Every structure is written in structure tokens, then in C-alpha cells.
Length: 270
Length: 307
Image (cartoon, rainbow over all chains, first blue to last red; front, side, top):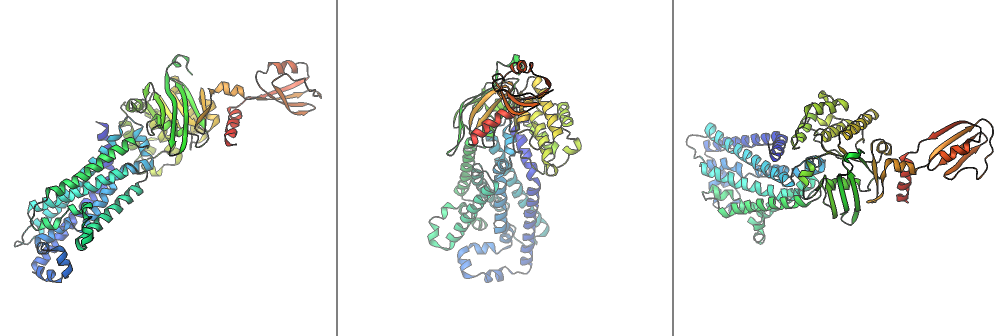
């Protein structure tokens, strides 16, 4: 077995409970959302709820409010609900700070005193991120599928599989983007808390930037700096295809972060 | 040092320097450790011992100079170097949620050489870390148990070179004895031991040669015997009758520290022969010679550094 694989299995074993619990919670949330959508559908309350939305919110959301206030729209909320996005980005940051954590505890000394090349440590973290991201998204999709099959009313219009897939792919790209950014920070840090805090702060500020820019025109000029700008779930719900360049931007940031992590980690003092 | 293996170097360091920002941790260090030798790397805290060790393992990158292990450059050929090295860090970082066995197995798998189960068991027995202990989570381990586990992981691959950073830190006296015996045994099998320490008695007991580091520089590099011979021996002479001390009676190298009518306390540098010749003429009842210790001479170097 290659040394990188040994390292990967070790890391996956360490995070397995966290990731499995997170996956189950996310899947459960998707089921709950289907339940909510069924309840609204049965009481024909979508129009009433739409009427309750304040004008400024409607202006902010544009025509997508119509798409969102439907059975299909409510089911899809799980892919861009702030709690879901926050949890996923948070867990991604947690996973990507593993190198800094290993340096902080001193475990990295034991690992790198073996005949293991430093780039494998970063490769391991990238693989952990990819596997865990795939697992959690798969659990979300499974939750959506199970919820629809068990709970959806017969007359309800289901979200199409391609819509769910597009939302999951775009969300996955966003997670990997933050994984790459965090990995770059982690490859320079000596403390996990410092790497995590910096990445978390960056994620929060860019999220707020994107949010503010949607309502406040002057902020729009710099909103392109926010990775969250390249995740437009409401457009997808409205039936638009994923803009390929958005995916490329997110994957590009992830790749640049990973590249920087390889560079920094190979040259740093442990 | 085993004389046959003395010609090949296990560790070679040339003009090695390391800066942490503006702080100079190691300055133009030159060092050669021979294969089969047990080498003590001494110095006060912050002298640069751990920095040097970490450069040998490519955990730190030198600011200038070169370091090689078993003929291979530590930075350019680090993988080959590390496949022959067993390392015990000064500060052990284990994961508390892993068991001792999981940790040993994981670290063994990361070595390219297979670990002999029998040898590991032997190490466990000698360091008194039972199989039941190894099934416990590391968060339940005491400091001494973690140290034992650290030693087992360093020794288990039976590497050509053992680099041990403060190996007896946290070990009880019995376990220190067990470790000394283990070190002697591996050295007999031709392995090289490079250990840092500030416990002078253990270095004196285990090592063939020492280097004393002070503020990043080697201020003493010598065999233990040579260093010991540099220190004065203390001699107490008890007489049958009262003896009057006469200045100039003592041979060169001998110095009277305390004089009583029936007892002298002396400090002797070099051989005891001349003193014994002098004492032959006096009514000596008893003679007590205290062997010189490394500590006597090294403390002088340490003190010089702090002044």
C-alpha cells in the first residue's frame, strides 16, 4: 500500500464520525424540507406565503421568488439554506486545516520523520476534502430522493434530477473552493485555530459582501471577489443552466489554493 | 565506539547555520558522527540541539551549510535518509483518540521497512508497556507511558540511525536503566545513536563522544574519556598520625583544598602516580579517590555561556 494511501485512510478514519453525522443531518434536513413543502402544497398556501414576503425582499430575489415559492422550490432550499451552506463551508474549513493541526500537535514530526514526501500530506488533504464533499452531497441528494419518494403529494411538481444535480455540483464546487483557500492558509499556519479562524473570517466577509452587493449598488463593483457570487441557486431553480464560467472560477480558486498549499508546505519549516 | 565501523560517517554536518528571522539558532556547525557510535549532543535549553536534529530530518530547512546522513544529503535525498532513521521527538504529539497499538501500527506502515513483531514485543517487554496498555486510548496515558510509546516507535523498525531528542525525559529511574541497556545493545549491533540531552550522567554512561553546543556553536567536541580526564579528581587522604602540611611538598597537578592534622582533601589533575609517590613517605591510613565526572567540566562550559 502506498504511503499516501495509508495517510489518507488514517485521516478518513479520524473524521468518519463527524462526516457521517453531518451527512445524516443534511439528509434529514432534505426530508424535513420535503415535509414542509408537502404541508404547504396540501394547504395551497404558496400564494399566501409569497404575499407575506416584504417588497424589498421580492425586489432582491426578482422573478426567482415565484420559482422558490413552489413545491419544487421549497425542496431545493436545502441546497442553499444559510445553515446548510454555513455548515458545509465550516466542515470544509475544519477538514482543510488538518495539516496545521498536525503541526500544532507535533504529530507531523512523527509523520514526516518517515520516508514520506511532503506533497503527499497536501494530496491526502485534497483527497479527504473531495471524498467528504462527495459523501455529504450524495447524502443530501439521497435525502431529497427519499423525501420525494416517501412524502411528495401526487399532484406536486418534483424538482428535476438535473436541477438537483446542478445545485449539488455548484455547491460542491463552492465547498472545494473554500477547501483550497483554507488548505493554502493551513499550509502556512502553525495553529489549527489560527488557520480555521482566518479562513472562517474570510468566508463570512465574502458571504456578506455578496449579500450586501445584491442590495447596495456600490458594493457590486467588488462583489466579483466573493466566491459566493459564483453560486446562484435561485437562477438554477428558475430553470437556468449552471453558468460554466462560474464553475470554472470556483474550481480555479480551489486549484490555485491547492497549488499554493503544495508550494508553501514544501518550503516551510515544520 | 566500535573501532571497525569508525571510518564511515553516519551524520556529517558542514558549516550549518539556521536563522529564525533575525535569531541565529545554529551557527556554522561542523560535526561528524561515525557509524556504530553513540554520540551525545549536549547543551542548555535553546542551545540549538533540537534545531540541528530537525534539520537532519528535513523538518527544518537550513539557512546555509549542508547536512548529510549515511552519506545522503538530508534535504535533497531526504526520503532515503529518513528510511534509515528512527526518531524520538523531544515533544511527542500523539492523537489522544488513537490507541497505542493503532499509533504504532500506523507509524510502522509509514516506514518502508517491515517491522518485526517479535522485536516490537521485546521492546514492549523491556520498557514495560503491556499489550493491555497498547489497547488503551492515548489520552489515558501518563507522560512516561507516552515516552515509552515514543521510544518503541523510534526503535521498532530497527533503523541504522537512532536520533533521540531528550530520550529519558519523563521516564522513571528503572525505565531509564532499561533504555540505557537498550542503547548499549543496539550499538553492539552496529547501530548509531545520536541523542540530545542535558542530563550529563546519562550521556556519560551511554555515549562514546559528545559535542557541547552553546548559543548555536560547538564549544567542545571530544570523547567522554577525554573530557573526563580534563576534570580534576578529588582525593581524600587519611593519616595514622598528625601530619604537617608543607607547601611545595605536593607534585604538580595536585592542589590541597582542605587540610586537617590527620586528613587532606586534594584536587588532582592528570595521573595519580606523582601524588602516590609523595604520599609513600607519609603515614597514610586510608585513601579515597572520587572519579571525575563529566559534569565537573561541562558545568564550567555552561557557566561560561551564561556569564
